[in-house]
Image (cartoon, rainbow, N blue to C red; front, side):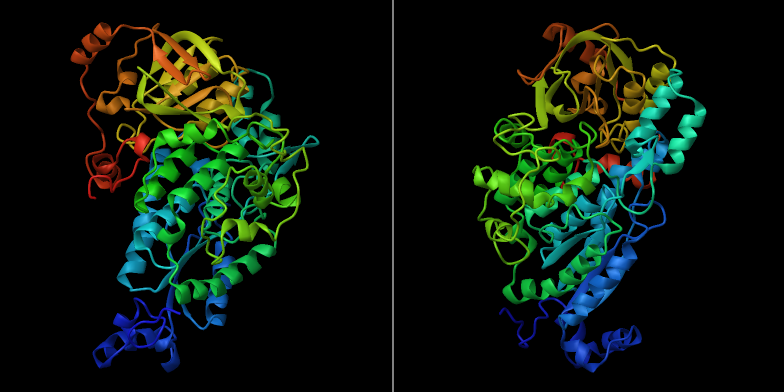
Length: 565
């Protein structure tokens, strides 16, 4: 057991609560309910991302209170605090969507600030929506105090006309309505049932992608990533997290002991096998950066060549996260990967045990419908690929788990604003075979690298998802399906090649060759570059301007601490 100099588990908080000179601080602590014996106990920060902004987070206080109860039962003292969230599903298609990725940094900064500023010995964060989770893990990696992540769980599917539906269907319904394929009554009736209650989006979208990645990483309780939000098991998980943290304190197990090169490769492998969101590339690179672990965008493609795709989950499949839970959760897939040598079984986890040891408690097998065995995969390669070429020298990300359109050659249709693309699609101006190029939406250029679900949903809803290629330096929702390539780097705002593409240029995409090119000569590219002028941002102050000034390339995770260390 690792004690401080006073023989206590107060690795940080002794500077607040111990000694005669800390009487003023103790007076403040007594005002919030502490008594004499509490002063010698470990202080545990409990970050609560509860919010009425989104159904993803509206229930989290219930879980945070269970965390606090578990912390008290472990003879520690919990301190609850809150931070922000942004609802991608609500902000999508508006200027506000630019704030989504920015919120990841704000969340990380705020959790770090409170936990550091109040000298907390440990940290537990309860979160659910997309940017909550990587933001929480980034803060944990920076702080490097014993930490645990608790996921709020996913929403259940809605029902319409005898079928399961979710938010993905609503965005695609907009495109279908614009082409006269469904009526406004259909849209409204779907709208009323698509999101039946609390929880993060139900498919293998970004929230469930990251919950799965964090479980694989070893930073959350095994088996918790797939539990639906309304399931009372989440309350037990939350309480267990509170009690479990004491063991991390006693054994001095910190996030950087757990978030290693090996555990991050485990996270990547699970994302690839489950057909997870392209956003996982950004977020895992960012977590690695904060944990001071060397991880490169090419690592995703290297692993994708050997890790099979083993799920039939939406947006590219039929099922949702609650279906994964019914057959045993993420450990089912992890056991499959482990037995084939595709996971690092010796990686440490928050339980104090290795990944392999944790998985011994789970014996369910793939059902062959929701999850598949390695011996019979949906694909022998993973659900994400990294493409490079003269259009993306630093790389671009494509989710092949949600499309069969793996080769394309066609003319560029160039747009500098998302709304222009949406309007062009809904007016029927985009044709089969086109390559829609949407630029100046990168981390700096957006700023904020907004998601394009309104656009991709409209394209799919219009019946063009498998015949039109969308190319952007922005990013995509985990609910996106179809032939979509994002994170093109360098981005247009810094003079990347995507800024130089003109209407009619021939663009070539070939997944097997990992190729993304435009058919113009180097000389022509240089000529255009000499005539190019950087855009002038309309954001002169505030959080968006600050973010644009600090943020790194998408190929490095779009982090804002890049230039500080």
